[in-house]
Length: 113
Length: 111
Image 1 (spheres, rainbow over the protein chains, first blue to last red):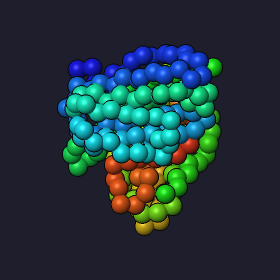
Image 2: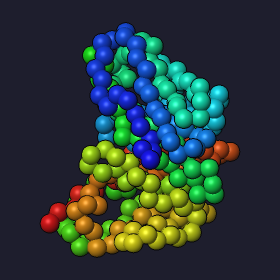
Image 3: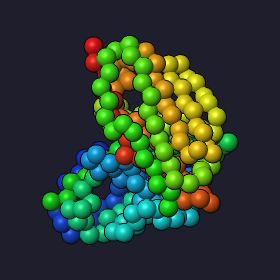
Image 4: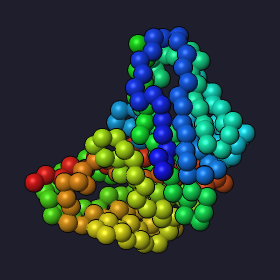
């Protein structure tokens, strides 16, 4: 089992370009998350998906869109990248049981110039 | 939303020493988790502990929900314990699913 995978691992964009960050899980979890981590800070929630076809805004959703077309995949799209979106992006899933642990992917390091 | 603060921000220990990391939160929570981010950036879930005490090897955690704090204890520290430790709580009351993270405690364990 790969757990949670993210592509790409690294990306450099110019201001105004668009891109989609991909996340896939083979853990059969319903809940999936997108977080961003800026230097010296904790993780901030961008979007959350409780199940296929549902999404909910987190703390910092502006400038992002998400798509949860199936149970396995949850993508994050930047329509017009800005330097303020330079960050490390983490995807996560959550176990559905009484001990709701989060499992994180390895992250995507994005630089917007 | 619920505010979360961690202390100390930085900690340097010699191998074998013990340490206590603290997480304070501003409102009642029904979900609290501790995570370790290793020097390569990987995030690992350590504990789900909205109340009470749990132990896993050299690590243990205690949450006193009525006083709105949680403690992470690391005993007999090893160099592999280095990294950043985060606690996470719900963004606001009424949800257990959407978690917000503190700014972390950066731990360096030296030989």
